[in-house]
Length: 338
Image 1 (cartoon, rainbow, N blue to C red):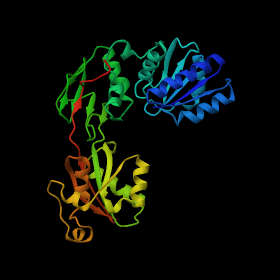
Image 2: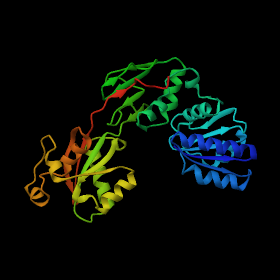
Image 3: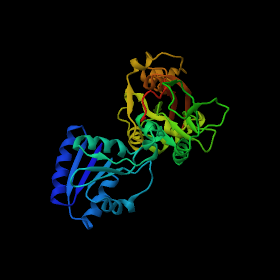
Image 4: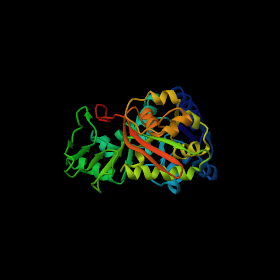
């Protein structure tokens, strides 16, 4: 994690520097600062709140609460925020305990300092399944994140969470969860297609690879529009996209590079020989084969990039070709927070 530490006193500064060394040794990227509470506190918070994965204040919890208050947006995007007293006795997660990882980080810091991690989230205290923590550990995207509260509330009330999965399920389900059929209402939906239950929390694995081909110099906006149309045609959630792939001749294509940068996705490229060796049945194009040495770029690169099966064959329009494929996937409940 990218972490920023702020202290306010000489004692706190010593602890901050020590914690910086300990967390860096654990593989985190850490920056430690010290200031007096005031304007510097607020400018420091504003700068790091959107740039760091976690903020650690060494001092009174009230100082941290007032500093972060103007910046709070959403539990799905806010960073982890923790407070450590300047004697290093207690570590308190204040914000984003589950999705942001504050609870886990508090436990790690507690172990490093010999301090008590003060965990206050109800599911943790009762030893119940925390769906947002588990989703993060599995790399799943969330749709309808507001439903996290509903799922956790039902578990705390002793009610059963009905789960539907488009994928095979490994490991015993946590206590309080029950697998249901496709036609039954559910509280938790695991899949890459839109959930039919509007109140359910949907968790989406980013397992889809978009294979793309295009004319030279085509604009990023056109590529993005074609990609969006392909997902609509395949009835897939856009959060399921995990990578984009093409032939190596497109490795420096500005529009594709700009699209991947905007979406924060890796861009994979393959030689014509690698694509021709991709197993499967694909839509051939003699013109494309004569031009680049492989009979189909988008379908073959989608399957090659995903290692799975084709979901949507070649879509053509505006000088762009798009195909979608998905990697094999199974839901793994063998490791949870409980």
